[in-house]
Image (tube, rainbow, N blue to C red; front, side, top):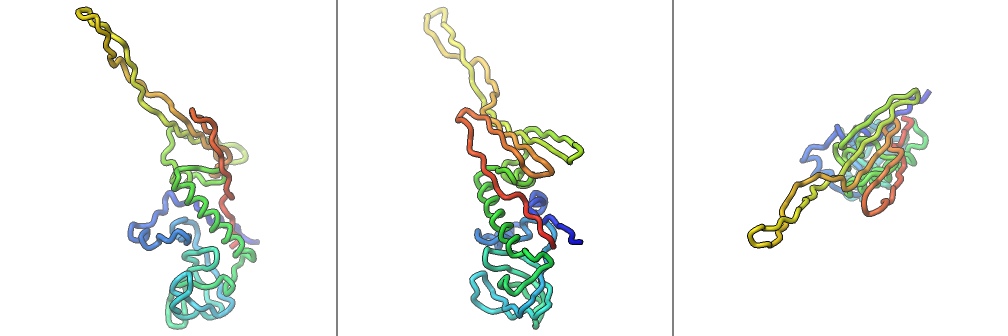
Length: 233
């Protein structure tokens, strides 16, 4: 029986690349597996696979023989960067998905969905936005620590709600008349902290199922993305 492994972006709040790695892994078109966490994905070479130095090809680094097990390091929508034993030693480089296989017969399509989802999540996080289908760790990366957390455990699993409250200081003034001159002056009376807007994010089993926005500008648009991808590896 196949064991379904959830290879998600769900541990990214805890798995962070070092500054040096982040500089190297800066290509916006490449999804780096070490940055999204989860279990390592192993693939099998089914045709001799030429190894290239870059995602666009270029310099050849060697070849992986048939039946070589390789670990997925990064990917684009057209190629995979993997690591494995080539004929002359361990090599990391880019290969074509057509030369690889997996226990999951639909691994190419699933990895494509995974890739597209990660790019969508990157865009949301860069704008400090959230969407239905994001994981709780992704929401944390986008909006930070919530103002308030609620959680509930039911027979169907754990649910929760995170609230993000945006406040602002409002200065209140009174008008005072100088008894000697009769002139009226505006004088600071007190300062209050008032709620400017609020975002509430509902979770079921760690995935966003609803988003509520309350602000003076009116209701915002709620985006929906593909939930975390499940691989049958």
